[in-house]
Length: 403
Figure (cartoon, rainbow, N blue to C red):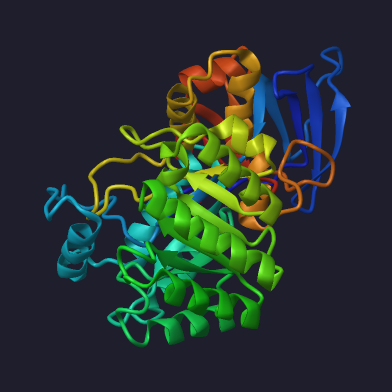
């Protein structure tokens, strides 16, 4: 039987971001105070007082690009198949998801628990909406989130994986999902999938304006074609007044452009308040992370799919993926490694609808403890998560998930 998660009132003797040891006081799921830790004062014998043993503390990790509805995690091994193109993977997934029970509460719950095991406490998850599923995938994800007792804070992107305009009726489903509470509507390669970038984006932005939701577009198209579609998104963002509500996922084109062209596009994205999410893919041109952040383009990190019909890879460990992001970005200096950790945690607050997500007073009490000398050490080694606190409750301890 899984033990009930312990409610934390004081998390003693932890080192936020590698600083001096403090005692973190918690009430109603939020941080209320950070007091200097006095080792001469023994811990009171009270419920809710947790010994942090002087471990390094970072905020709960934020997975800014997940697909928790797609996984076969927890099921027998599924061999990879299908043609290795975006369209080939879409077709393969459509042909085999039903036989694997995808989407299903059991596999979605398994993924959420893996996230918690590895310290992820907040996510933005894309959930497939198509003519075969309707909105059932969103219902499944919401049921799974409820099953972990709210330990994972989530925002949902209604995601048209099989295309928008080429599947008549999908725009109406996306609108229905937004009306029913999905925080964002998604898109997919408006040029190469729908063959109508203007039409797809006009449709998505019309929903966003009507329903007051965000837009989050998977953009695999590279080079000038991808850049052109980002420019279309910039125009529509400014025209609709949706600054801060539009995201480009993947955006390989940004990393592929010549330096001057890249600089102009990044500056325009910053002026429009457009954000980017990356899954730090091996083999793709790395995003210019420093240039993006300096231009005001928030960058989020996510796992993408985990053990699904697109790829057998993925563990749900966002800290290990932070190591990969740092290496691909050629980060070596301490401040760069800290930046990588912040991309995966505190700086990702806007991707999950939070004004603040950090180890500060007023923030949600989402805390991850690791045995590391400092933040750069934690990013380079990605040590095991000794303790995970979400919303003021201990939800994982030494790899055991408690929800």
